[in-house]
Image 1 (cartoon, rainbow, N blue to C red):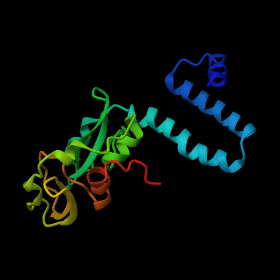
Image 2: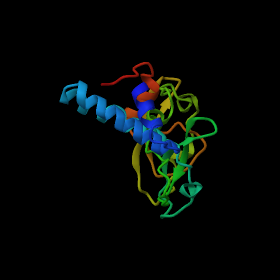
Image 3: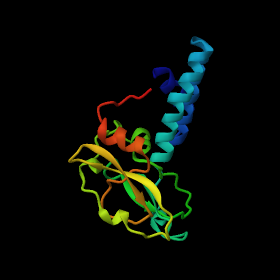
Length: 190
């Protein structure tokens, strides 16, 4: 870390992105002189990309345009990193385009990339299921989704047609529900 700071201070870089690029470059130089190729590749894939992802993607300003209806009301559950609360928040997305990259397909990805520690026991697991999610809202484009029933402590499948609701207790696939709600202590699934 000291080498990184010394190298980057000498370049008179003023921006956060420039400092990040300089430090990544310094780390890569150190890796290529000290460690075998297999370790270097693994490190670069798992660490360097995450550092860049956190600073660039998570800190992009969330574009409220993402919340607008741009397609045929084919709403999908998405997440963004909220800078005020430093947590990932759910929103409903209908295909609007933006330059902001602060949008994630699932809660765990957002938490993993943007929050310091993923919260595997999400508040969504504790919320009541909104039965409005079972209604027909998208012209019969039914697909299987899951919610967590806290009374039986299990992920329950149901047919979903894209209705919006107030509850975050809605998961696109069984694995997301299982990891988030049924097995919250199993943090590392490698």
